Image 1 (tube, rainbow over the protein chains, first blue to last red):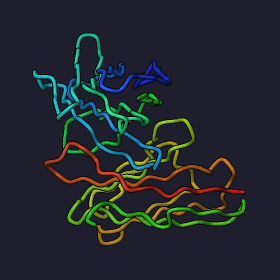
Image 2: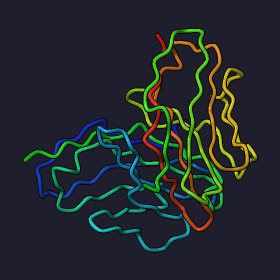
Image 3: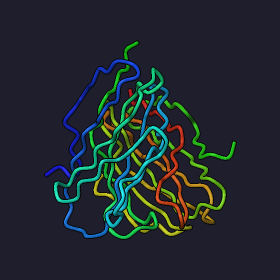
Image 4: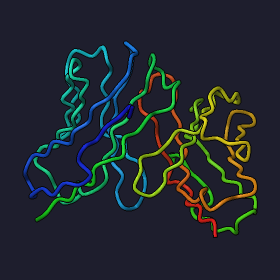
Length: 117
Length: 113
């Protein structure tokens, strides 16, 4: 079974609208971390936001927020007031086990987001 | 620039040749990771170093792949007897205690002809 599932291969969104990118995960660990990265056409992976499995509040970073629903095993990324520069591939990723960065990340296949003017 | 750097950025080689990539992590980051990303896919974990010790290796890392991190600073990833299926972007990331996120370099794009 896929550990990270991103069901939206591509999305078109009008500029200034909010967008939700879906991510579901599968793990039997109690302690894990969830990440979202952005990859523009230039190729670099840009960290956006992190949610720990024990964090009670949804993570927020500027225009990015993570809608964490633990019982559903979902970790959707919400981008408010989208901008043209948000056009990129977006990857959801998971680290299983306790924190500290000791484990490699498992990535989903990504969602290609295109913001239209 | 104090980010993760990788060299070369692009490498074209013929099947059967050996190639070596280098990653320089962010200064004082003791953890270093290698990932491989093929077209249309997310990155796949290859291996992980804590300081100079290689602590984790993926099943994707066949015997033709070897990685080192002498002195716990920069790391090299060598692929011997390259195959066309090795064509991919090879990404390096680093982090340190106190951080959750991994900081990625720009990657090395390998094309095997």
